[in-house]
Structures are given as structure tokens and as C-alpha cells.
Amino acid sequence: MNIRSLVLLSVFVGIGAVLHAVVPGLVFGMKPDMMLTMMFLGILVVPKLPYVVLISLVTGMISALTTGIPGGAIANMIDKPITALVFFGLFLFFRKKLSSNVTAISLTVVGTIVSGFVFLSVLLLFLGIEGSFLLMFTTIVLPTTAINAVLMGVLYPVIQTISRRSQLIPEV
Image (tube, rainbow, N blue to C red; front, side):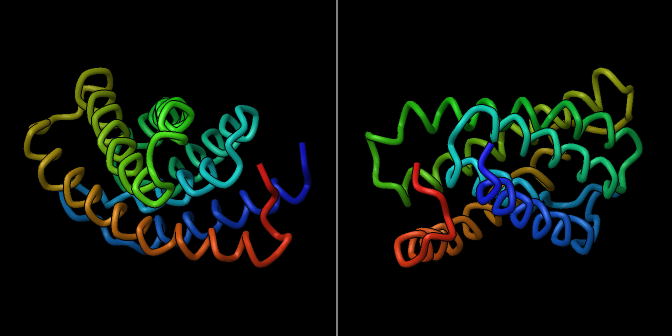
């Protein structure tokens, strides 16, 4: 594994951890998961399976440590790797078919919805947390999807510009 790539992914995870820790919980202690955007950025910048698995596991662990919902630690540990692999697979399929900004934003929308669906399913079905799936999906997942899409729309072009102008971001 390339040290430069690992450091870059660590920066993304660190930024995501700060965002995840400071954003307040909205419904049932659940908060918008901005850490997903950072994980998605890491996958877009270093789209190689070992790095995808690594960033998903680390993101899952950090999310688990900073969650405010009962059972959220387990749900995050299951949700992040599944979401990352779905995102990565879709990225590999669509990367040549769409412009990179459209691909990044579209995949962020799909990835956030997949993440929210898996997270809520684990909470409600497997952990027995009480609540309405539809209520939590519409009040947490859909607004988070919009926030993450806007965040990706702002950050991804900046990351692309930095990668073109410097050698900080490894070429894929």
C-alpha cells in the first residue's frame, strides 16, 4: 500500500470524524452522517479495492465510536463496508460513462441512500430498536442525502483541482 494514499485517506477519515462528532443528533439521537462523504471522496480519489476495504472499516469504527444512538455502533460497523463496496462497484461501472462531477454527486446520493437503508434495517430488524423506518428514513436519510450531495458537489471539484496542480494525490 502506498503511504501517500494512506495518509490522504487518513485525512479524509479525520475530517469525517470531526464532522460526525460535532453535528448534533436530530431524530432519536440520529445525526446526518457527513463521514460518508469523506469515505466516498477517499474511494473516488484512491479507487483500489484494498484501500476501499480499509477506509470502510476505519470509517465504520470511527462512526461506531462517535454514534449517539443505541445500537448504532453495530449498525455502523455493518453499514460502512457494505456501502463502500456498493459505491465502489457503481463507480467502476459508471466512471467512463458520465462526467466525473456528475458521477461523484450521483454516486453520493445512491451511496447515502444505501447507507441509510442498511443502517436503519440493522437497527430496526436485527437490533430490535423501536421506531418507524419511514419516519427515520424521511427525516434523517433524505436530508442527509441532500447535504452529502451538496458537500460532494463542493469538495470534489476542489480535490480534482488540487490533484491536477500537485503531486499530493496519487494518480490512478
